[in-house]
Image (cartoon, rainbow, N blue to C red):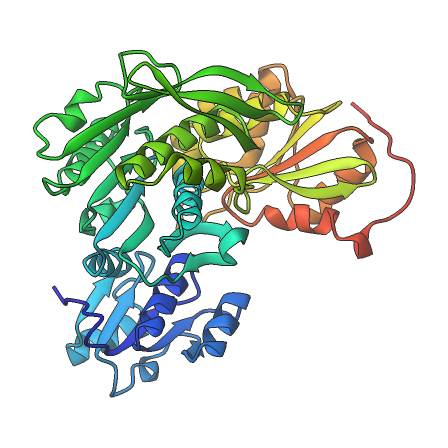
Length: 473
C-alpha cells in the first residue's frame, strides 16, 4: 500500500473531492505541502473553499482530469470501475488509496491518533473530545463528520501529535486505520447492504479494537451486549463507561437531571468517587453517554478536569444534531441527522422533554435497504411523535427500491394510532406545515439526506408568508 509521508509531499488527485470527509482530507494534505486536484459532479461551497486554498477543481469526472503530474489518487466507496477517471488511473498504473486508507495513512503521522467509532454518536463524541483537547491548548488536528462551528467547519488542522477522527464501520473502512486510542460507542444493526447480520458487524468492531497497540487504550460502552467479546484478548488498556453504572464500569453518571431544554446535568463517577459535575448544552440522555465516552478518552490523554469541563461547557452541538434553526410564524424548527431507529428514538425522547404543544416529525428515510431492514422499527419509533410527515426515501447510492416507499411507512404509522401522511415534494411539505401547524408547535426535520432544505426554507425570513395557521386533523 502507498505510504503517506508528510516529509515527502506529492501530487494527489481526489475523485469525489466535494464530499465532507474527502474535502477535509484534501485540506490536511494541502497544509502539509501536497499539491491537490480533484473532481466532483457539481460545484458547492466546499469546492469553492478548496479552490481558494489552491486546489485544482474539475466539475464532471473525465479521463483528461488525470494529468501527467498526478502521483496518487484517492477515491470514495461510491466510485466504481466504470468511472472514467478511475478507469484512466487504472490504465496508467497510478497508485490508489480509498478515502479510509488515506485517513489511516494520515494517522501514522501523529503520536496520539484517536478513532471514534459506533453505530450512533460519532460526530458528537468526536466534537466533544476535540473541544476538550482544544481547551487544553494541545492544538489537535480534527476530522469530524459534521460542521462544528467552534472550528469553523468539519476540519481543523493543528500542529501537534493529536489527531481525532470519526471511524465508520461501513464497508469495514475503519479497519484501514492506525489508531492509538479507540472509542466504541455502541454496536447495532446498520448498513445491511454490506453486513450479513449483527454478528458480522460485531466481528468487524472486534477486529477494529484489535488494531490497537499495547500502549494504546480502548474506551468502550459497557452497555454493549456481551462487551467481553470485543475486549477479550486485547493487549491494550480497556476503559469502560456507562450511563447506568451497571456491571461496574470504570466511569458512570449519577445525579442526572434535565433543564427546561432537555439538557442534562450529572456527576461523573470514577472508581466510586465523584470526579466532577457536568452540565451539557445539548439535549438528551444519549448525549450523557457521548460525554462520558469523550471524558474517558480525555483522561487517557492526560487532559485535566478543568479543561474537560471547559470543553463541554463551550460545546453547543454540531450541525444537524438537534439543531435549533429558528422559528416560522411561532413554530420552532429543529433539524436532526437521525436516520436509524435508535437515533430517532434518542432524538424524539429529547424532543418530548423540550417545550412544545404538538411535536411534528418530518422524516426522510435514508436508503431502501435501511428502510426495509428496519421497517417496523421505524414505524414504532416515529409513533413517539404527535404527528408525522414522510418525504420520499433518499436513495443515495441505491437503484432498487426493494418494494419500499414512504407511503407504505406512513400507512404503518397510522396503523399504530399516530397521525401520519406522505407528501411527494418539499414544497408540499412546507405548504402543509404552513396550513396545519400553529404557534407553540415544534417541527423536527429529520434524516441523512437533503430534508434539511425544508428547515432552511421555513426559517428563511424572505420566504415567510403571513396569515393564520389552522391546526387540522
